[in-house]
Image (cartoon, rainbow, N blue to C red; front, side, top):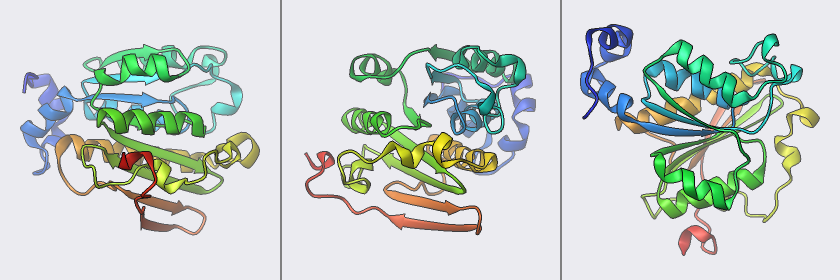
Length: 252
């Protein structure tokens, strides 16, 4: 590993370095990791914060939105004085204040086929914190094409869904295998219409960050072809296998 741990870094990350599954070698892996987070909202905020605090070396942040008042109840990186300001600019400042060792690349844009192609190969791991299916399928298709590790999250009301896909493994399904209809309704992901309890976003985003860290460290089990379904009103968790669709693009 190119990254070296000085005395300051060892002290900063000592509580996770002491874990036998991480240690100095594991921390070096985290420091060398390059993660792209798409969406700096309810899911993206906890993902970004915990990956930063864990010591991820490079974070790319994609979002074209500005902070508004209704964001503040669940998007933990923002405060009242940030209203009206660019999310990616605020997030970059917050990351630097938490951990100046993390390099940040901000992308104040709306992803499409052209610009994402220029971005994706700079990163090894992709986190989907978007709130629409057009973006989710774009991430799915590009990660499939370029064999990236993708963690997708979705939230509504008191419910959360987390998927992870290691597309280096040709045997696993993709997001399109689960949402077999060509154009699922974005109403399923619309917090404005459906509502969302702020803690749900925090919990789901934290699990997404955990999936990334496990993959970086090559420890534990990732969902990888399964969906984790959370109902936080009833405190129920279900892990369900996604069947690979024979007619899906992931079989081509």
